[in-house]
Length: 350
Image (cartoon, rainbow, N blue to C red; front, top):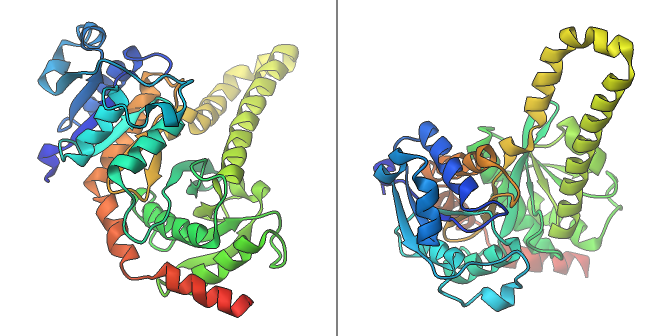
C-alpha cells in the first residue's frame, strides 16, 4: 500500500474529551501529513457536529457510525467481543486492510485485549508490549514494556529488546541503539533470575544487538541507553514516577518564582530558558504509546490529552506506517528462534 493510501482508523469516542479533541487533533495532524485520510468510528451525530467546525475535514475524513463505545470503567472481559463498539470497529478496520493503523484514547486494557484478539501477535513473538519514546538530557530513548504485561519471562524481555532495537532505529534514527535491562543495580548478581536469563539471551541472539547490561532507574534521564527494557509493572511505575517528577519540578519552579522578588526581577531574562525547558518536557510531544509485536499498528493516546497531544499520536503512527514498522519486525524475528535459545539458557542454568 503506497503513502497515497495512508489511512488511519480512529476510535472517535475514546478519551475524556471525545469526540471534540479527536476531531481537533485530526485537523492539526493533517497539516503535517496532507496525504493522510481518516476513518472515524463513533456516534455519527456527535462526530459530525464536531466536524462542522472544520469544513475541510470532509475531504479526507469518513465517519462510520458505531452504536456503542468502550467506557473507561469497562473491564476488557466485558467488551472484548462486542463488535458494535467504536474501538472494536476501528481496530477491525486495520485487520480488514481498510486502514494501516488504529488510534484510540480509550480504555488501555480494552484496547490491548481487542487489538491482540483481532490483529494477533507476530509469529514467534509471544506477547505484545506497550512502548513509547521518552526524553533524556541528550535526546530520546524508547522504553518497553509500559504496562501490557505485569509479569514477564526471560523470553518476553528478550523479545522486547529486539522490538525496541528496531523501534529505536526507525523512530530515533540510531544505527546501533544501546540496549539495557532496567534493574535495581548494575551488578550482574542484582535483580530477579528472569532478568539474568534475559541478559544471556539478548547477548546470544546472533542479531548483533548492542547490549550494554543493566540500567538503574535514576540513570534513565542521563541518556545511558537508547532502548530500556522492563516488565510492564516496573516500566509503568518508572514512567509514572518520571511524569510526576516533571510536574513536581514545574510546580516548584513556579512557586519559587512567585515567592522571590529577585526571581521576578530576573524573569524576563529567564523566560527563553523556561520556555525551552517547558517545550522539551511537554508530555503532549511524547503522546502515543504503541502496542508493538502485533500484526498491525495499534496506538494508545493518553485519555486526558488535548488536541495537540492527539495530533502527536497521529503523527507518530504515520511515521511508523511510512517505514513499514510491522513488516520490519516480522523480518527481524524470522532470523532468531527465541524458544530454542531459551532452552539453551535453561540448560546452562540447571
